[in-house]
Length: 157
Image 1 (cartoon, rainbow, N blue to C red):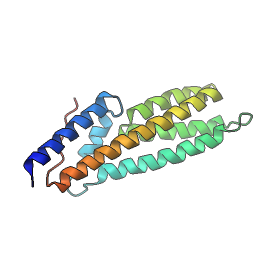
Image 2 (cartoon, rainbow, N blue to C red):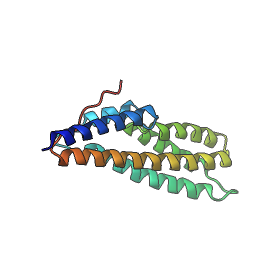
Image 3 (cartoon, rainbow, N blue to C red):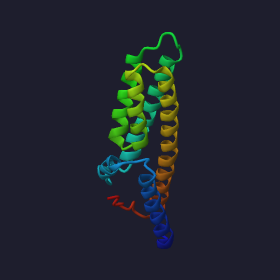
Image 4 (cartoon, rainbow, N blue to C red):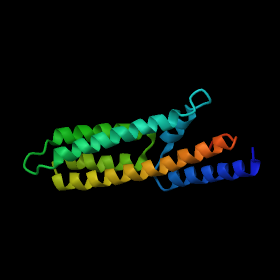
């Protein structure tokens, strides 16, 4: 094990995860999720987040289909998808996704199709941005482990 390389990777990991919180991509729920991961379940967070991203893609696709016909939008169905997305984004700490869902729900409540389409586009963008950033974070974790190091705990508060 090269301790210099491990220390550099660990510092890079800490700086990167802190930046995700500072930029508003993540909230404290992500920290709580990370606390559930241990040696017995080393891939717990990445597996939970992967399921979240799979759900996001399905929900966004379903909501997109519901909104594509201007004369026949089922706002209750769209609202149900927004509700699911908001709940799952809250549970993994996906702050920006959750925040867009709040605006999205407001548009559903007043049956504003154009507003819903804008929110759908925004939530799709935010989920894809977060997915890329967390994939980078998980790659950094793997590099640390492959170099013989341990994943540092990062205190965000």
